[in-house]
Image (cartoon, rainbow, N blue to C red):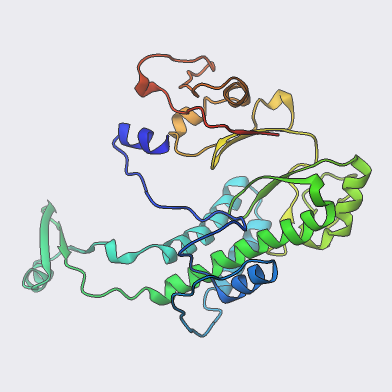
Length: 320
C-alpha cells in the first residue's frame, strides 16, 4: 500500500525489511551484545552467528545528548521541546545512515578555489550557480563511518531493550495474559490491560520503577515526581478506556475521548496532507466493514475519483 502511494506520487520508497520489537524469529539481524544477552535470558536461541565486532565504548555524545534532554524538560513551549528532541534523533539518525551513498561536493566562491579543485582527478560534475558561486562534485574516495554506525547501533539496541524490558519484565510480568500488545515503536508501546481499575492502579504501583508519572494530572492516584526527567523511564500517556484501530504497521488511530475524534492518528506511508483529513471513524469503518481507506476532503467526506485517489486495503487489521 505505502509503496503504491509513493510511486504514484513519484516519491522514493525505501524498500527492505523492518525489525519489529517482538521476540519472533529474526534472520540477519545486527545486535549489541547486551541486548543479545537480554534476549537469550528470555528464551531466544541463536541458531547462526555470522561475525562480531569488538570496540571500546566512550561517552563522546553524552554531554550533547544530556544537554538536549535537560533543555527539553525545562522547555517553556512545545516547539522548543520538539526541537531539542529532534536534535538527538537527527544525531542518531545521521550516524545510522550509510554515508557511502552521499555525494562529496564543495561550493567554490573564488577563481583560486576553482583552479585548485577543477584539476582534481576525482571531479565528476561541475555546476555554475551564479557569477559568484559554483558547485563541484567528486567521486567519494573513502568512507569513515564505521565507528559512528556502531554508536547508532548501540543507541537503538539500548532503546529497544529498554522498551522490551518495560513490556515483558514490567507489564507482562505484572498482568500476565490479561496484558495484550497493541503496537510498539522504538520508544513507545501501547497495551490493552483487561483488569479492574483498582487492580490496574495497584499493578502499575508495583512496577512504578519503570515509569515516569510526573506528566499525570494533579490528584491522580499515580502522580509523583520520583523519576521525573530520568532517561529510559516510560511516561504514561493515557490510563483510560480507549478505542484503538490499526490497518497495518505504523498505521493506527487511538481515541481516548470520543470528542477528540482520533487525537492520536498515525498514517505511515500516506501523505501528510491526506493524513490530516483522517478521523478515527475512518479507521473504525475500515476495520469493521473492510474496503479501502479513501482520500478525504477538509470536511471528512470521501473524495471519490480514480483508483489513484485511494490508499488502504482490506488487510485483516486489529481492533481493541
